Amino acid sequence: MAETVNPIEGPFDSMPARKPGTVVVAMGSKGAVALRDGQGLTWGERVFGGYKAFYLVDISRRIMSETYRAPSSQQAFAFDTVVSWTVVVSDPGRVIEHGIRDLRTLFNTMGQNAVANTARSFTVHDCAKAEAAVRAAVMHLKIDPALSIIDVAVQMRPEADALKLLRSVQEEEMRVAAINAQSNVEAAARDGAKKALSTPEDLLAHVLVTKDEGYKAALRHRLEQAANEDMRRFEIFKALIENKIVEPQDFHARFPDFLNDVFKAIPATATNLNTKQLPSQAADTVPGEVVKDEHL
Image (cartoon, rainbow, N blue to C red):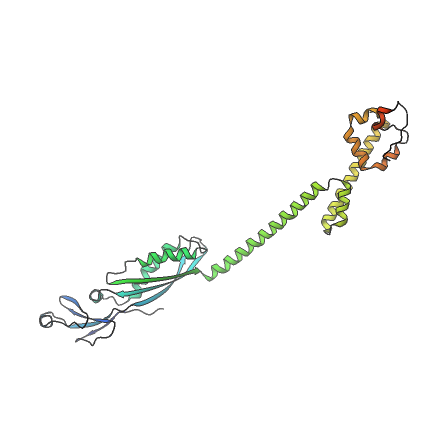
């Protein structure tokens, strides 16, 4: 526990020897008289004043420091706060009359309330702003008319437990942000690949160069899907021709995109059409004539 700051020495039965930085105060039936600058009691005061007790009151500047745990606006966090007051006794007579022998308790009680009420408006990230606000609050405290505040210094920082918790929270936020960023990059890359790899040739090339085994397996699956889809189209094409659902000479005009996809994707399968007329040449041939496809 911090020492009591007592500005009073005495009482003495007679006038004490003066000390630097002190004032002699005589206490009598009519109250207290402060004797400054070597002043003494007058003859009338000595005879009729009834001054029977004398005190030395320290009027030099004193610095008192107090440490507080001040709440912040964040429920889980608080400030470690050190407030240092520079004070003087401005009315020695009042100090004696009111028996002010414990300056620290006076300042500590009012200072703690002022610090707590001011600090709770700030987060522990705002130490500089909190310090300025707390200093202004305690600088203007009305402790007692006998005392004057000359200066105040305030130091505030997040308490040790709060610092540990803040670091762990920040580290977790950074870790999650990094994971999310990586996921976004990977998702964008996969979406881009999905859009770009629209042909079996592109899929096959990407499968051959990628180092990600999981991704490679997924691409192989897509390649198989693409091959199966192309074969399915070709089988549909053959069935339509063989069953004479669509005449060869009409196929190109009615389903050009379908036909182009079939022969672009699997040109080798067209060799199965040994006796069938290709739709792309239908306009230049007569029915039943067999034409060889120049693309094969």
